[in-house]
Amino acid sequence: MKYLVIAAIVLSAGETLAAQQQAPGFATGRGASTTSRTAASIAAARELYAAARYDEALAVLDELGASATTVPAERKAIEQYRSLCLLALGRGEEAEAAIAAVVRVDPFFMPGESDASPRVRTTFADVRQRLLPDLAAARYAEAKQAYDNKAFADAATRFRELITLLDDPQMNGRLPDMRTLAVGFVELATVAATPPPPKEEPEPEPEAPPAPAVPAEPVVYSSEDGEVTPPVVIRQDVPSVPSAIAGLTKDRGVIDITIDEEGRVISLAIRVRIHPVYDTALLHAARDWKYKPARLNGEPVRYRKLLQISVKR
Image (cartoon, rainbow, N blue to C red; front, side, top):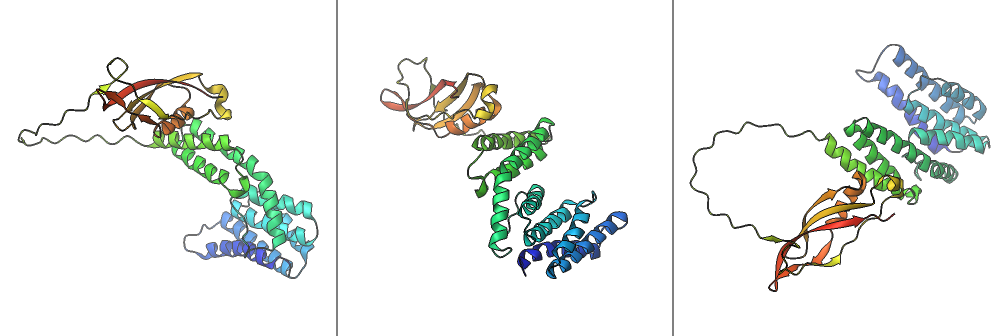
């Protein structure tokens, strides 16, 4: 009766495959026949496992695993069941290899307390924790390749999945620089994937009465106005450059900001760029900067200034 609860997980995968075959619209032909045979073999392995005939169940699963035609959902079910048989036979090292195969197919899978025994969950967690950094690195490479190929929508989706993986509790905060890069690439890819709005032909407008006078825009002062006292920094935190792009950045950049009468940054733009990912992080940080406002004759006024940014490596 060892690990019968986790066996139910694998059984459900086999039952799902069988149910798909009976559903309307399920593919027919050679591919469907192969899936049917695989589902039947998984069910046979389940029966052997339930009868404590672990060696025979393992033989069936090994034969299935050697097939190149198994789809990811089937392979995940096969490797889950193989790990149960191997653990039951005391072959822990091989069981860990089977669990690793499951994690590579689905890095987000983790059996819950109601799904598996403590021993299985502990072994699964140990293997998964070791593999997650390498899996995250592989997913970053795939997402970056999609971005370089200008498949921006696909790249944005892949980078979001990577962020979810990096935020997994078992990552323990590892690879923070990769997460910073992924967040930046999500924003860049999302903007690049957004199509421009369609052009609409303006309709002729009926004559309207004269518009009321619009209040004049507040005057924006700068360093050229000597009679104005410049703003004073209260908070102006500049982010550090992630080590992953440290060798790709310029040493200095310039940011253009306008500070209102309450000392808030109300507009900002990059004038001299440092690196696309770092520029995005800098603009995010600048929105939280705070100043004592500039003053003219004791009254607060708007002020525009150019800041030179020296990167922190």
